[in-house]
Image 1 (cartoon, rainbow, N blue to C red):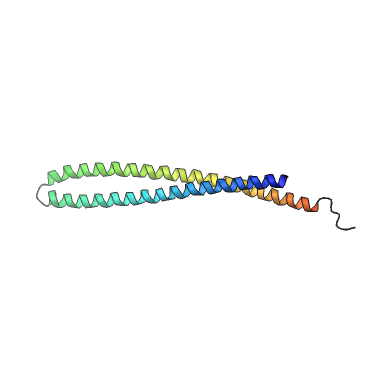
Image 2: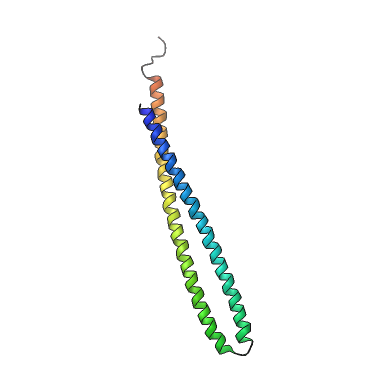
Amino acid sequence: MAISNIHETLLMYTKQKSMINNQLGTIMMNMLSATKQNADAQSKFNTRQQNCYYQYYMAGNPDQYEIVMEELEMGHEFEMAKLNAWEMQLELQKNNLETKLNQVTTFEQSWTKLLGNNIKKDFTYGGGGGS
């Protein structure tokens, strides 16, 4: 009876590990998406910066260039701050899930060892070894 209870507990840990791994996969995909969005935002900023340079500075209007660049940089910094905050949140979630996964794995290993001990006891219980 004790062995079947241990098996049930081990199945519960297997299910928990599966759910945590699924969540980790989702978070990793979101982290990849955040990195891509970060790169895309930087690329768009670089393109806009270059366009402003030719449109205003090279056209002989450096004062307008400075104004437009300041607005562009402020918008870019705000967008990057949002993306960085999202990445930090995802990293925190990933770390929390990895900690949970390690805990569940440790519990599972303990119960697996207990199962092995119980099986060993069941086979050696009362056996004097053929007198």
